[in-house]
Length: 134
Image 1 (spheres, one colour):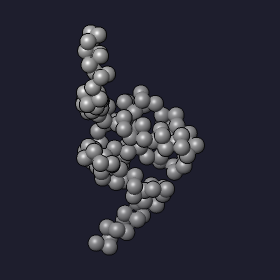
Image 2: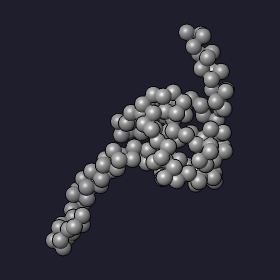
Image 3: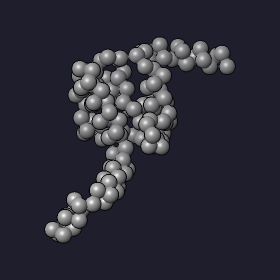
């Protein structure tokens, strides 16, 4: 933005204007890079838990297709009150294996929540049991 001095002063003097601007910039970024919230969240979790985090924004940009890598279901934005079942999540393929390019993938939040600390095979066994029970 090319602002003149008066516009800059008005911006910094008006907290409501700054909030509206911040929300607008956030919304634009979510349209450009829908994966960035999941990326930032898992980066924070990895740091807090002392896990490896070597995926990059370039990895996310190139890997993200708009669909869950396990189900093929399209991601849908959350309502703004935390993650929703169809929101984007980054899964560690091998639990506790760290967020590395070889060990990470984009999945639905519901899938990642269901999987938890299980392996794919353990998760599939439970899913199959669920299907045969219904």
